[in-house]
Image 1 (cartoon, rainbow, N blue to C red):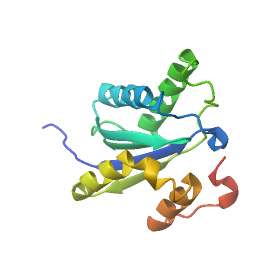
Image 2 (image 1 turned 30 degrees about the vertical axis):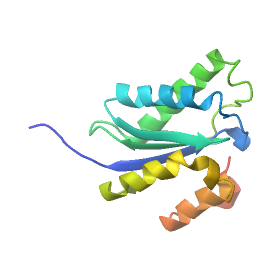
Image 3 (image 1 turned 45 degrees about the vertical axis):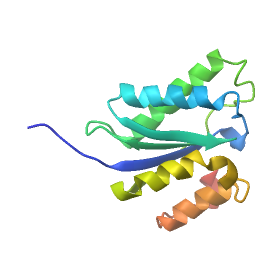
Length: 150
């Protein structure tokens, strides 16, 4: 018997010190590269996007994948890829330690995709830090502000 699952994740992580490095010129290439990593790991990238200093991945993991391995590999591979493309990613300082992983029902997929597609107008109203803390509170995840953005 094969294994089947459909667990919808929103993965969120930021650049070191939340340094802004994404812009209209370089973001699409990075999102496409990350989508390729997710697909290579037999998972489904529904939407990848971000704004300035952070990334959101809306994905479904293959049953053999773990969240931590997926995030580790996406961050590692994209880090080296951006170093190789340093003309496009001059301001990229590396990825911050850690990430957020949040699960959703399949019925939320369309709203999540739209949310990630509309990061630009969203972040005119709320900072990444405020957005991330809001997610942690919504999911009742305990955190220590002292270590939250290392």
